Length: 314
Ligand code: A2P
Picture (cartoon, rainbow, N blue to C red):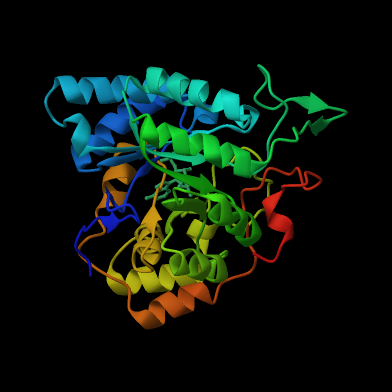
């Protein structure tokens, strides 16, 4: 179905299928981007403490509330618990900092950003001997602290991000509130079908991050292939009279996923939302999925951490 229909989470709440991504959006650009997105019809903004721009996202929300363009209940706001705040006694303070920065009283969705816990303290990336320094906190204990945030009304829903199957199974076994969402990298070069199937079998919704391959990722190397320039996707896009970015966004939506393309460019923000007048055929979805090449673009690099999620097959 091409219509803009929100997905229903396992707790009965709804989540708009397109959210504006804000990873890599500079503080000086993100306020305008969020305003442009809301004016274009976006009702979902994806944020995180570690992006370093939640205050500036909050400024845009404040303006749009004051202008009467949206009310709080009209918009779905996600944020994420950073790895240095996994210790259960730090979780509530972390969401309160995010809420203060965003100027909100509650989040719609709060995710454990990564399964790995980092050494607690002021540094977001605590380093020792040129490596990120871990902490021994178990993400299952972090999950139990996340559950209290729902009970306290600080977040309507909770979930995880970048968890592998085994890690999700451990959370599910201990949970009294099941994760409503798992946010992972998904695009044709990393189609994630096994992990998506696993999440669907447990009624956990999926948000696809880096749907456009994140060409602006800070760790991109010269000569890295660029998803938005993939010839086979261009051929499909031409057939529909749409851009490659629009086909990549539809690739997520037509597989039943939520998708969070990032842009700070008004014309692209509008273009990325203008995807509700077409839908991909099953054959085209299959063809896009056949481009799978384990082409992950986002990883923390801390492969030595005991909870590094991407050493398992999925
Ligand atoms: P910009 O923010 O300068 O407009 P992802 O969502 O996978 O992380 O990708 C974000 C990157 O893709 C950013 O560099 C963003 O650029 C770019 N981008 C976003 N939308 C489009 C589009 N419709 N066409 C081309 N590039 C886009």
